[in-house]
Structures are given as C-alpha cells and as structure tokens.
Length: 324
Image 1 (tube, rainbow, N blue to C red):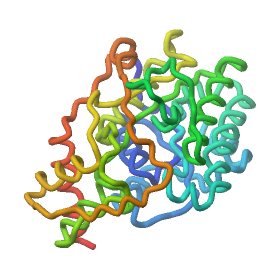
Image 2: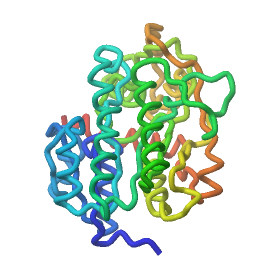
Image 3: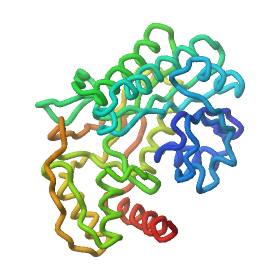
Image 4: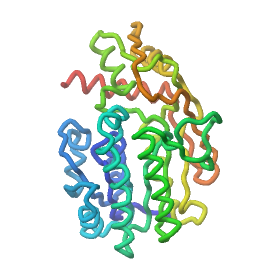
C-alpha cells in the first residue's frame, strides 16, 4: 500500500488551478510538499488560502536547469508532479517563445535534473493535455494515436509528451504522462476561459462572451477529478504497465461551448443570451478523450458529474467575487 505520509513531493506549477488543489490534497495525506514557484501571485488559491504556508517554497524558473536540480536535491524529492506550464492558448499565440521555453525547455530541464540525481524522483507524473493530439478526424482520442499539434500551445504539449516518454524509454526514468480534457473548478482566475469568464459575467449581471462561434466541443473535467487522476497515476508508477505510458483522463462526455454556457446559466439560475464573437483563431473544432486505459489499468473514473462540478465551482466563484 502506497503511503503519502512524510513522503517528499515536488509540485511545479503549484500556483495554478490544479497545482493549488493538488498541494492541498497532498498535505492532507501527510506528504511533505515543496513547490517550485516562478511568480508570487497573491490572487492564487495557493497563497490566498494559506496553502503556501504549509509548503516549502523554491523560487525558480523551469527554464533554468540549476533551479530544477536545486529543488529536487535540497528537498530529497521522491515524487514529482510536473504541472508547471504556460497554459493560456491566446498567450501562446501572442508569445510563442515564452510558451515553448516554459513548456518544452521546462520539461526537459526538470527531467534532465532528475536523470542527474540518481536515487531521487522515483515517480514522475507529467501533466499534459488533449491538445497534444492536435486535430483528428477520428475521435475519441486514444493513447495510441499520434501527437499532431500544429500551433504553438498544442505543439508545446506534443513535444513535452514525446520528451517525457523519451526520458523514460532511454534513461529508465519512472515517468507517466496524464492527458486531461479542459479543466475547470474554483481558483482558475484566467477569465478568458469559458467557465470562470461566464460565471463572472453572469454574477455581475453581464452577458457571457464566447470567443468561438459556440460549436467547438470539449471534455470538461472537474479539478478534484484531475487531482485524483494524478495521485492514482503516481501511486501506481511502480507497475511496469504504467511506467513510460500516457493516460487519458476525461469524463467520457463532450459538450459544446454554447451548451457549457447554458449549463453554467442553469447552475446560477440565470438566463442571459451570450455574446458570440466568433473570433477565436486556430480553434480545434472537436476534442474528446477515451479514458478506457485509465479505468482498466488504474481503476480511475471521474467522480463528478458536470452538474455537481459546476455547482461547487459556482459556489467558489460567488464567494470569491463577493470578497473581491
């Protein structure tokens, strides 16, 4: 039985939506958590909810291999959750260099640091995305499908995935890759995203804004399900069927952008016509994941329905917006 108590864990990207919830969960399990942090953002749940006060903070940049080595070595890290990334598609389009530096260089720097420190990092979970697959005429995505990212953010995820599998296959690093659908939940303050942006607009008696034409479909996975997926993956990284593998994690149901807005409206008891801009560039029209492998090998399935996840998400944002 895998035990988290007193186990030394490094989380990159701790200030992001998943990072904060993951650190909080790991602390509740008794783990000793170190967080590699680039910028101190007081708005992040990681800081505002006091999670940071219970973690060891390593200030550093994933683009600096020495910072990665320092984080692993000084804290004698056993388990790594690599979540650190530039995750905003629009930001990646505006500044592809920053996206590639963080997502690609940041990944190989962290893995190279682990390779150079034998005896540490005995389990490494690399957080990826369905965007790594790019656009495919065949859906749902399965893990055997090729990675075909074409635009900066998608390509950065494709590259990071391939690099991770290469370090596992070539150097024996105990790595597994987690590919999730669109993640939502309390604590995401990137208001350009459909869930937080729609909730904020409706809470302020405004019209929700859709950058697309409303038709693109996605899997939406509640943040607590993502955390359970990452933990399940880490706990089973001693199995030969898991090491060096990628796993899809999704709810097994896709929903269009316009229907997601309507679901949020139902959760908030509001009915306001959205403003449909149709200006989104390089939008993949349809994405959905097959999570059979995660279910059969890891015993993981999403615990939250969309309705339940949105209720908890709306409650969090209402409290946040009322306080700010």
